[in-house]
Amino acid sequence: MFKRLTALFRSFFPARQEPAGPQFGALPYTVRDGQLVVLLITSRGRGKWIFPKGGRIEGMTPWESAALEAYEEAGVEGEIEQVPIGSYVLPVTAERPKPVEVQIFPLRVTHQREDWKEQGQRYRHWAVLAEARRLITHEGLADVAVALAQRELGRGRAQPANRAAISQ
Image 1 (cartoon, rainbow, N blue to C red):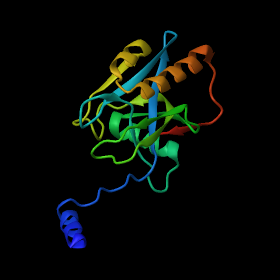
Image 2 (cartoon, helix red, strand yellow):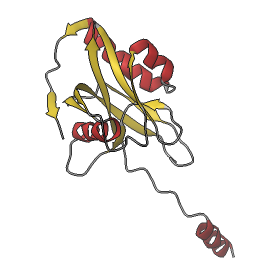
Image 3 (cartoon, helix red, strand yellow):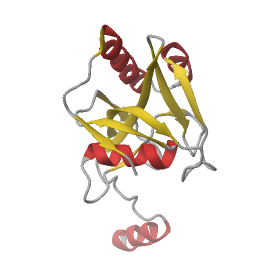
Image 4 (cartoon, helix red, strand yellow):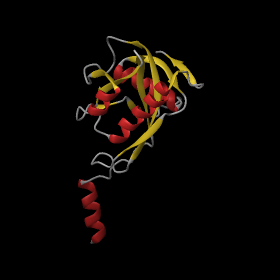
């Protein structure tokens, strides 16, 4: 009897799919007049300000996947670092049964397209660090931007050793 009830329940409420694993994001930025300026985009669901991110794309490295997400979601290209600046954790939600770590790779923007793949689904906005911290609601995500600002502005404009030029 219990097995039949369980089977009936599962037929109405199928098991949720497990997340594919960690996600990878890009932190698009530039330095203007001695200030770090970052590119934020809105999430599709709730319109929160975030950085481009997504799952690992088959055949690509984590940083290449992050660069492609930045291209598709924000319409930017540039030099992506091969080492993440930090990470944050997406909490459990109805759609996400487990927390998901998102590793963030800095992307020094060299080109911004006027038209891009997800243009009709998202807004994008360049912001100095203070404004970005106000707009970003996820504390861990804001912390990653602060870490990049400290690194970039704390030592001038020195280039990290591991960068890859990415353009589509």
